[in-house]
Image 1 (cartoon, rainbow, N blue to C red):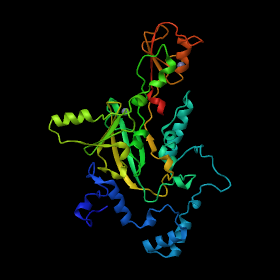
Image 2 (image 1 turned 90 degrees about the vertical axis):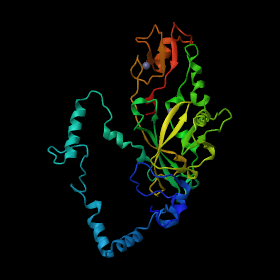
Image 3 (image 1 turned 180 degrees about the vertical axis):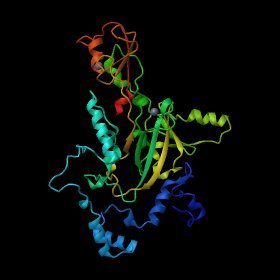
Image 4 (image 1 turned 90 degrees about the horizontal axis):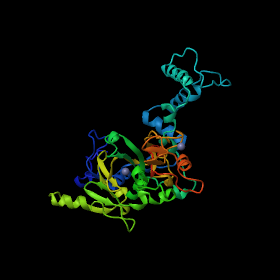
Length: 383
Ligand SMILES: [Zn+2]
Ligand SMILES: [Zn+2]
């Protein structure tokens, strides 16, 4: 959006459309939304389906052709005219012709031939994209109209990167991409971020494996913060929450940094924020699990978007991880890791739940032999 017509103070709140630098200047999300809605005719962001005739008339007027020409174009360019076979003989799309001219078909044939040589079937890249999450939400409408996303609502694209401690991916890989609404609070995003550190269970549980789930880090250590534009937004929803930013702020003060402000995560909506699009911000939880969070886009909701408010924050991408399977059956995902274990082939050794119980406990659940057991959360468990 061009800022030339707006006043000096207002133009601070309008980002430059299609910005060529890495990130925009900071602007207020709610004001941006307001300016968009003031500038746009409401029909452009309405969720009502446009009547086909009106759309055709507008199209004809816009590009300066006669309505008859539009009709002729519609007939000529219709996808019904795209046919290589008679209508009553639909081809089998899995059968590639013997000598295909198209490169895509030749590639498909090569992949099919290669797949036939495999003993174990694996998911190809094409199958992977077929289940891309973003496509699943397109055009979804709620069963109850109460849950409809309001017209003119803004949608923010948020990329959450792997935690900094994940050495291999820390600079560039998004762990998750989510769509959040302007009306969402920061805590809604926080709850939608899925990170292994939240599910870790610390401690040794060889005597009492059944109680391990009661010690999940997410339930024990609930504090977290986002650091956006010099403000620490702390999650203070529960009495046991602590201000994790305190140590950083005190350190900053003792090193002559300007004083950082704090606010509550649960009181802040996305449309209240003043942020830069494309800028790396910080999300910190479990004390020191730090993720870079980047808002990559802000736009008005369109009628083709997922319009069921209950499905937001909408997960549109998640990175798939390789699973580490059980060291005994090599079939199920590992749930336990043991050390000093006389039953295990290696030290340490990974076990799935079934193999772990069968090998280390009798039918009454009594521990057999000597070993130390620690709950193990596999990154592939989220796939
Ligand atoms: Zn984390
Ligand atoms: Zn197993």
